[in-house]
Amino acid sequence: MPNSTRILLPIITVQPTFQTVISEVNSGIIPFDTFWVSCYKQSEPSIHAKIHVELDETRRDVVNLVPKDGDVQIQQANNHVSWSLFPAFQAYRRHVLK
Image 1 (cartoon, rainbow, N blue to C red):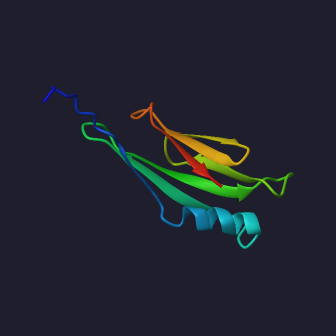
Image 2 (tube, rainbow, N blue to C red):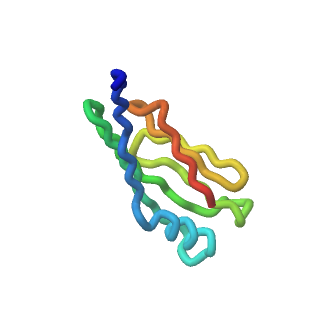
């Protein structure tokens, strides 16, 4: 058997109700809310962040996701959201379809 290199992937956990949080804000049931994101990787510091969810002030059909309490970058485009967890896992990106 050939010698293979082990790759340790990070473990990403997201609040199980994050889609409900986004949906309720988008529907106007609640004006804003937050959900959490955590990332763990062996021999690396853990990353924990909260994402603030709110309706856009001028475009009321747009939901803004704003990172709070952690080092997370969020990009939104068309029908998906992408977030990157920094600095420990700079290469890891997660895409979530709306």
